[in-house]
Image: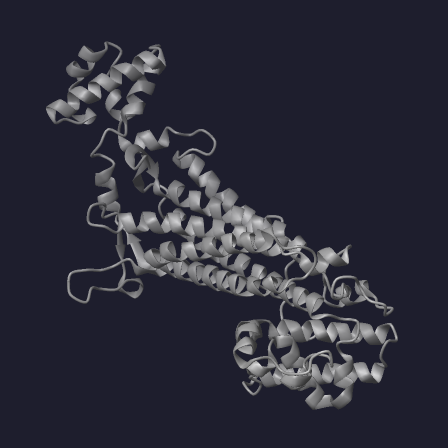
Length: 475
């Protein structure tokens, strides 16, 4: 098929070269080639199964398609812009290999249902890969947390010191975020895993096809029940981009904290040389490139989600050329999420070290134990709101005197309220402040150890959606 014969005899001349370039998608949809080959193998088998073509013709088609797969993997098949898109590139090469029987492959199929099939095969494969990456990062977070159950870190609200925490508890908060990401992708997967193959251009086909057969060969969980919906639906892509955006939100939040922690002002972590760079002019600098890049790349994925929503909002049924624009957004989002997950996992596993001495010092330099003073009085029968107001005045007085709560003498405590006893010093010690928060889900050390055990169990036994598919060959 040359450019002149791509279309029917309805057309008398080829596209203007500039329009051909503008129209072509081969530059990016070549990403789908293995999925296109896999879908075409299933379609050929279905055509033979229903008697539309002979078994011998189907075998020739399958062998030809697998030869193209081999050529592509060896770098010998590199279609150019004259092919327009990956589908025509494959069909043209197939015809070169098997002759006229290659022209039968497109029987009872349109590029509209073909590209929808390819995209779903691609995305379900990438969802599987990303879920595996999420599990890897969760495992690294668990290992870090297990090493830092009794390491203390200041906890913040409004970026102001609030209450001390177990560092493990802080890390497990991100584990929970990634767990939701893992679950979310698993929930989206069944809606990705629906076959549009056989919907045709928009109205189905007159040929006696068996859509359920081809869906079974491709291990799809279901088929689209409406052909118009089948070729025009991109909800699954929008859902994925939403999930991808939330993954990036979580990675970006962690990145921001690491950037702060690595600063001299915080000094909570030290970045290793294998995950940081220097300055071209300031020799003392060590820059947190990985978390900064992750934070920056987050906007790309957000933008792709917004672009997809705008793309779809005004499209009439069924297929429109606008939908060609879904692929670059999808491909780049997949690449960005996968790259950021890989980089952040490496950073956490081998690119930074927490500074326990600095962390221990940090939790003794503030009034984050003030709530515990109020709680102490409440356990002595003082109404909490009264205790709360009383401690607020104490903090104000200490600030004026340049003291911390731990610096007050027992007579000074008793002057504040007679209920204070010697045990107030134990009650406001950072380790006790953390340990005492033993409510379910709290930062108390016993609760954190329980949470670690539960997290490990949830990773091993958590409900999963079967996602074993890939483009490794014909199915």
